[in-house]
Image (cartoon, rainbow, N blue to C red):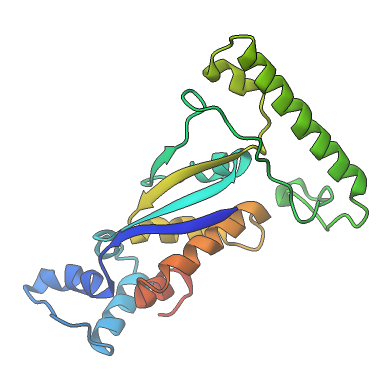
Length: 211
């Protein structure tokens, strides 16, 4: 799984000036003292609109089951590779570790399974069988949009994902929690590591409690 930077618009200065315009004022350069205090005040008191005059686009590659969790976030734009138009490659997600069932279903999963050789064998076999069925169906003349139904949820997909700083922070705060699914947490943390250098003061205020 991988998250990469595409583009962004704005800065910590834009956030501060978006708030400061209420008083018909602006700074031409970021003031480390005054603008930092202003941004932290905005985050602390839930004044979120100034953070949304920014925009970040990332490219994400992850398995389908992870994408279906992340696509639920509101106010974020999503364009994904379509199996209606392309023939998928045999690229599947294999976790570094398999996790046991959780005693509490709300937690999703439990401790790592030490002896996972059998599970890896099952996954590898399922991947090979599914992709073989997929390609056979295509060879028999089936259209791509129906043949893709034979592919499993751990097929790798990719998408462009865009949103304001506020939207990204909202996603991160939910998906980077310790009790979030490990795979979605990985994507959230990768996104955070890309966004933080672009908006260091704002990101710290919105996600790390730097208030």
